[in-house]
Image (tube, rainbow, N blue to C red):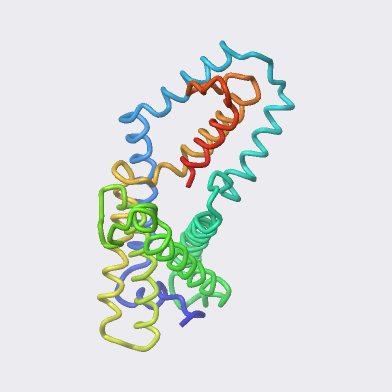
Length: 261
């Protein structure tokens, strides 16, 4: 199972060009959905307006060297290591899901565009990365969903309570779960493999097609927001909330920790 390319097996009845066109369509949906989300929520306008205000009201200048250092720090700490999460369990779950998603999507692209049929045997490592990525998504996602979510762990709500904001995580989990199920059924020659494939495609379409209504686009906005925050801290304009006169730093830090729980 783990060394098998399920997309090559499915090419017996589904042309590789159809699957390749599907992947391209999903990329277009993500790009268009992100642009729509940016325009609808005016995220870019808000970002650049804050950036101009920050430069205008800066207490001290930030050199190009400092900006480069801040950008590198943001990339490593906030983007690659998810340093915005103060809760260690949530950070680990997020990293599992994030890197699992990267491996899963990357391996999918390689299998569909480079090794779409059995005419060119798929290296076992590529298939193993695909399965590993799906497993990482499932481990991190289900761990977060049932044990870490604030409304479940802290507020005692049912883990089966679903709201609109859960669309991204649920469709991602469904895509990875049905992908693994499809691969398992196909490797064992089950007639239900086609049903698993169909559910995988439906879940994946919802994942990439629901960008304007889910939190998918946040992965593009969060690094920019983190970078802006660090620049504001460096130039002295990080004063979004009025702090008590007695303990301003302690209160501000507590607010940041609570927001990132």
